[in-house]
Structure formats: C-alpha cells, structure tokens
Image 1 (cartoon, rainbow, N blue to C red):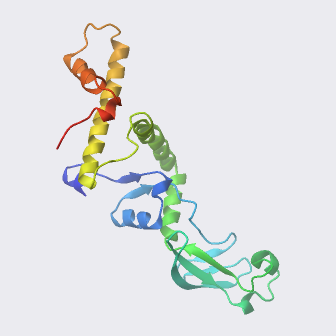
Image 2 (cartoon, rainbow, N blue to C red):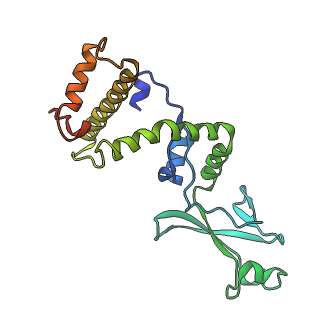
Image 3 (cartoon, rainbow, N blue to C red):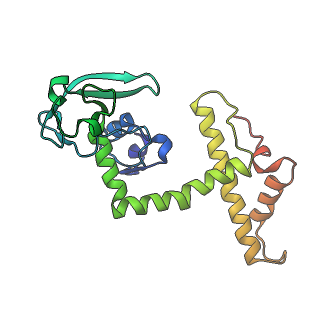
Length: 223
C-alpha cells in the first residue's frame, strides 16, 4: 500500500456496484479496510424464513428441520463461489408447507448461498447505516461526476496505452486537465473582463484550448 508509505492513512474503500464481490469484501477486510460498496444482484443469502446457524454451518427451516451444508462449488454462469445446502427427501415428505416450499416438482429442499455470505452481510449492514448513506452520497456527488465529465465531454472513453504505469500517467494528465478547466471556469465567473487575469490563467487557456480536439486530445506530452 504505497499510500500508507507516503503518510496517507486509507481506512475506507468506497466504490460502485461494479466492484461488488465476495472476493473484494474479503480482501479488503483482510487488509483492515472498511468497504462501502453496494451489493451486486448476484448475491444470494438463505431463503426467507430460514435461520442460519453459524456455528454448525446449517440452516433451520420454518418447521424446525435442519438443512445441512453439502459442498462448495463455482457457478459457471458468473464464476462466483457458492455453498450448497440440501435436505433429504425424507426430511420434507410430511412437511405441512411442502408444496409452498418445494414447488411442484422438487423432492427435496436445495439452495445455494454465496461463499462470502458473512462478508456480504457485514458490508450490507454498513451500507444501510448513517455512515454508509453518507459515503454513498459523497461518492455520487464527488467521484461519479468527474468520471462522467472525463468520458462524456473530454474524450477519455478509452485508455490507448499499454500497462498500468502508462495508464496511470494518462489518468494524472486527465485529472490535471479537469482541474484546470474547473479553475478557468471559476476565474471566468470572478473576472468578467480581461483585466486582472493571471499569467497562469492565460497560459492554461492557450495550452488546453488553443488546439482543436478538446482538452484531453491537446495533451501531447511524451515520457
């Protein structure tokens, strides 16, 4: 974690749903970081009305029957790690809610739960907390508009470089362009006439608006 080496303390990780996964939640917890990432639609907890016994790793159905853990597998559809719980046919044969619980064709109760259920549940609880709502609002009001401006209005729809180091340089230059554009807009509101504009402002306008193709395309700097 280079940020820590530079003296920046990183405690919370805020991201959108695209970064939601049990693997990510587990990794962040292992690093001592608190995640505020809305859960993805592929998350699967236990069935409604079923109570999970963490110590024994099984579920108890509404009728008090134990549905034991059977195996861990990787779901082919979206490559997510799952745990399977399955009760025997004999367990459900005389159940009074059998038809509602199993449906028309199933003979036994079987369901899958995400392997990282505990990590998901902790993250979901954080997202529902006052701090979680605050962090989500902060992300939506500060981070997302920047990426929207860069991709929709400043031409940064793709990174045309090879390797993380070169991509990092592109993002740094894009951030500089974005900040300068905001600065120029701010000074334009303060100084309606040309009098009093600093040399830096004139230089920035010449650099970023003096060539065709927009702000990002004018950054022809070689490393």
